Image 1 (tube, rainbow, N blue to C red):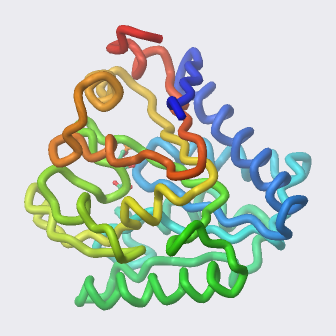
Image 2 (cartoon, rainbow, N blue to C red; image 1 turned 90 degrees about the vertical axis):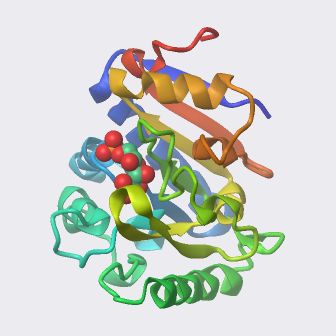
Length: 251
Ligand code: 6PG
């Protein structure tokens, strides 16, 4: 299935489009199978999307008590560190909606052994998805995975030249990101690609080249990791503003 492009005027409009997508998928998931499982993107772009979700929580109809939130990746920091994806989501969303604490599934980035932290997170995921038979083949069936895109075409913590891009068995892995001098923990391509909906949320001219390369250059996920995102039986959306889409020849 070809990716679906949704191009909005600016970053604020993209954030609103992402919040609307989140709410729609959450409501539909509860009707369809009684719960909703969403993996949140990290970085800075989704902050506004999460704030809009929190601001509109009362009227959005998101069934927070049956919604479970996960993380696509985490930096090697604790939950209160300024670089923590969890902290960003907690401040923008988690502390502002009636979401049961047990519905938040955090990656323990603070663990000194990132491999064991990845294995622990995979156990959490397996407990959730296997008990609900929410699988596609051997992988978790997220209702929605939100993804960012770096200027180097990384997504989640699937960075160019790293082993994580090629992981085919685990749901979660850790890998050394030399350019950051960090170990990162990330959902793997097969775990991401089993989702019902994957949505890149990207804004800003600084991402235009990466967007164009990922969408229009021949497959080379080692250099352009976001190209590894190809839903097995789901849909792929690109929520872009005009600036991020400005490098595309075919819009
Ligand atoms: C992370 C994110 C990463 C992010 C991109 C875009 O932990 O950094 O998961 O994949 O989505 O780097 O980040 P910005 O939204 O800050 O540009």
